[in-house]
Length: 120
Image 1 (cartoon, one colour):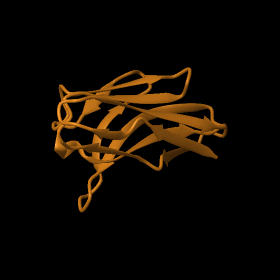
Image 2 (cartoon, rainbow, N blue to C red):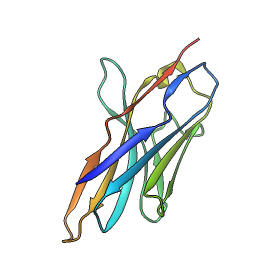
Image 3 (cartoon, rainbow, N blue to C red):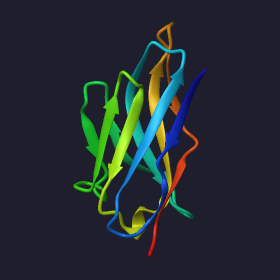
């Protein structure tokens, strides 16, 4: 069993910053690509950013230049630094991870999410 626990969400004003963290725990041999998704009320979940095991990163166009994804493999943790936040960034942010178990099988695991609210 694998657990992903997000933290760092909150209420901020437009233009401010937040840093999200997502730590993986459990029994596994390795973690591949990790990512952040978000879901705003009444909207579908959308991809925000991913980072693979080699450090290759992708970003949604809406966050390029404002958000930065990173990971600490020693801590099995992925981060999302969010700068210049806008009201449109308001959503529940979920992390996920492609986790390989000791038999070689890979499974996508999801965290429960952390709320980010950007408002005056």
